[in-house]
Image 1 (tube, rainbow, N blue to C red):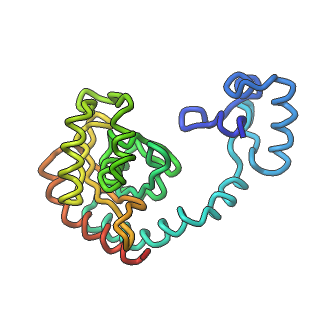
Image 2: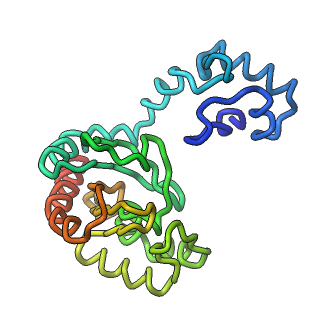
Length: 233
């Protein structure tokens, strides 16, 4: 597991020496483990650059029941939202104090800062804030008690300011990210709630920074989120 965790979006291909360094495993042990992972299909050869994640892990990943249930339920609404807005659509669920991207439907001008399986901060993304605003108050207090890293100049890092925004998000079921996660990008998201009102995911549209465009698509995003929530429930 430590070897597999050595890979991320910035390190898609690794040699054994780099795997050993990033995982903290002795090189000889890492070499033997890599051979076993190659034999099973969790890793595959990537030419002279080393190894990369294998397709067998993708097959296993699709068996994750909750995530696949959300993705399957969201797919038709996400595609419709993509066609209606002509913007990139993302669906994400919370894991700890981050969101994990479960679905991404790109336009002809894709937004490069998100990827399937990628992670992002709850406090700095529209998807994350949409989910966080509907979480239990105790969890919100826990998140706000920790440092809130600044990813751009516009990231909200003041706990009081973020709490005020979460209150608005909870009321209107719409969250905005105006260059808070990545410069030059806006995002508008809405939480996907189950029948009990518990946030299970969120859906968003993403594109070039412009608040008026974000507000223009807020209604469509909220409608899609409500439809997905009903389908899942």
